[in-house]
Length: 113
Length: 114
Image (cartoon, rainbow over all chains, first blue to last red; front, side, top):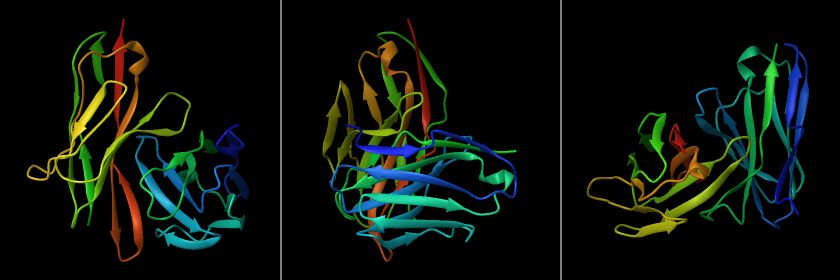
């Protein structure tokens, strides 16, 4: 009965590789988000989708490409991984873009070697 | 632009001690304010919120009051438990030209010793 789930939980890869992180929510929410949390725990919004359409894109390198096949899924694909991409990536969802509360997934810890 | 500043951690307390984690914000308009908690190995969970000035949010013994005059939303708990050990994030949500956006503070790690 997990509300927001992400796979994988851990991802270790070499520089230059391409990888994807998947996110699914079963809350019936319209809006989904990707956040990046760096080693100092600072959390920054990357993208937001509403009903499969991109509504927030926060000056993220275009090596990062989100894809929303339906409103319950928001996947994150990263090309040509760099050392600085190492972080914990959180997916979140909310009922709609104006809703106060966001529900977070457990995070994916990405380590680029 | 909008921003949230919270006290640096870690904060280490003994069980049953009083907790305060300071949070101040900068925002245009009237944002909603939140405290989220992140337990080890988990995602963030909403702890409490306040949507207008002088509102008090409360949950699980934690409280915070939306103070517009001091632009603050300090988190307090009268008696902490070991199970409260976590990272606490202050956040604001407001509407700008790009739509609604939530901005998080840097997080404050709390350790509670038995």
